[in-house]
Image (cartoon, rainbow, N blue to C red; front, top):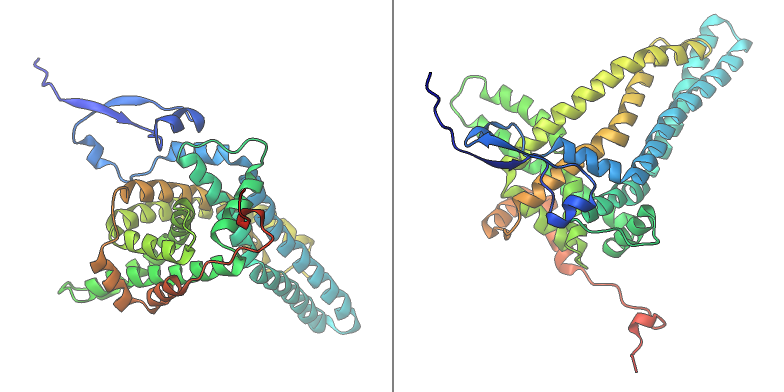
Length: 371
């Protein structure tokens, strides 16, 4: 029996950002012989093992995310239950129909109160939790050591403050970037709409909805670019990051789509698992709210997604993005196209051009002459 020789080459399964990063991140790397051409069959460009290793190495931020998002989910359950209990007590002054109504409205008011607090805290969460975690992940992706004597949270707070003077600045950039990304995904539907294919428009609508979910991780990658470039003008860095994303939209959307399937697929599994304990929580609420089990299970699935699955997806997308754009310059043709396509991009460009760096305080030691 004859055997045909197939040429092969070494392929890193978990490639580090650089050679130093291989040892410092603390992930086990290995190499295997894979036939030439087989590598092209891989479905995505990120390494699941490396992303998980980076998450382990940013455990303080993972714990912070768990505290924030699971705390929020628990607050929803407790405050909703308290509101329903107060409504049930007030309902004792009327008949059964009145008690059912006051119980329901008490729960709705409690739920709405927590939702309002979370809405008001969204800028703070983005500034401290998400952007801070990204700053530490960038440090590790580049194979650099954390400063000695400083916690990850302290380092991240200082690094984010350097790039974004206030939470409102970071939030404003994030909102503009999201608007531009939505416009880019809208191009896909526009292209399908003009194709002479039966059902192309309907398929385009479904695809656009899916891609809007998929690019939900990309805005944080653009923020990561602004942090990694260490630019004093975060608006300009975000503008450049968006253009680089747009000119590489094919590999970026491919990986974002796979990550969306992974993240939301696992979130659905968590939702199914949490249905039983959520139903128990509803049973303990006076006047048991029939739809509460589904709502609470969704809340805990959201908490798992935000605390654990989203940072995993962002880590994967950051790795792909930085490797894809390495050595590239922004394409002026894409910049012009984005300016015509999205008013948000025009606003981002205007803010980048009109940005004035903050003046150094006179009593700042860094501003005082030496000697």
